[in-house]
Image 1 (cartoon, rainbow, N blue to C red):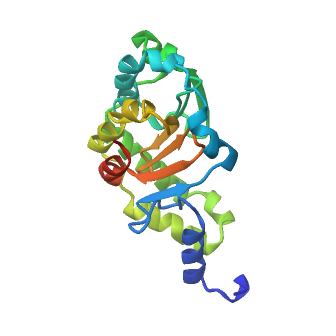
Image 2: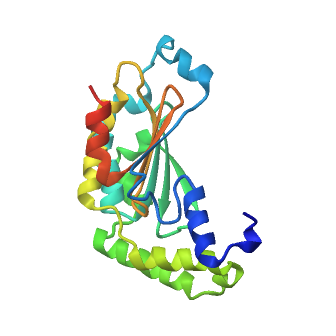
Image 3: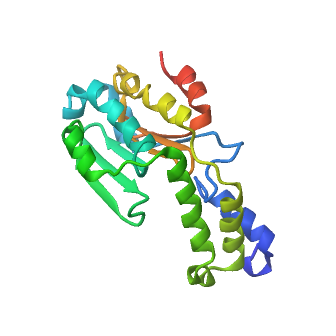
Length: 223
């Protein structure tokens, strides 16, 4: 159907259906999504040796740091490159910018203190609501068509952050997934804004999982 013939309600639904992860996150019908990667990587995954990375050697020390960054500090999104020890961070203190850190540096409490201001989780989520509210009232939304304004408004009204319990639940399984014998975890990202966890494995396949469904994902996929 031609978009010109669609009303705002139809356009809203179309926009939400077309995105793999929409502005409102994963729907109840999409608690887990799999994306196949490069076939050549998938078919040769078991023939490629896995080498210990820098982050593998410090895994027990750095996992509590990741939890601290997401729960006790200003980060709302964290990307972890397990092969190259690249850690990308997004913070409410500078929400439009992404920083990149070396995982080895993060095991230093002094380094963490210098780079990541502490803030209680409840206060962080309150400020995130405030930021969205300010955007909705700003001139920025004058540039958006009405159906996208409606999506943003509904997202804001119903928004709930990832719970602290779910953050801990997800992070405690990282080491196990990294050490799977064949299709092990290559990189990982977590967003408390949309309660979404993205997992990419050495076969180049990607799994996008709702944090609340992570227990089921683990049961189905871990030996």
